[in-house]
Image (cartoon, rainbow, N blue to C red):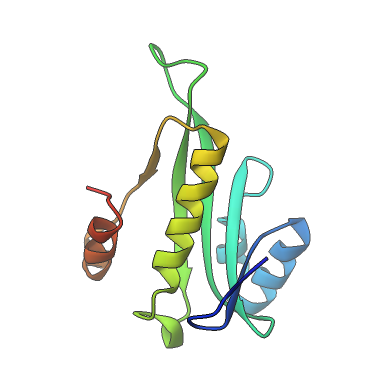
Length: 128
């Protein structure tokens, strides 16, 4: 766990047990999007209350890059009371660090048209 002094949030990697907490606090849909065995999920919490999660799935690339792994940011969610306070950016930074440690070929994300507000964050973090 890493205590973030700027916002006093705790960031940790989810375990199978964390999935139950997410299901209870944010619903089954959020829990279903978490990756633990085939990737990782970072959870941000404030005194034990869930405020954000980011889930990365490891994917093997097709030929000619077989035996090459990429990280795909499968979902990122932040509680509405905590948005625009740097929580998502901090989780993406930690995910990037973990992907580099794992030696993945690339870390990829996709955003839909209804998430236009997030485009500035993605660009500021080096995504294009």
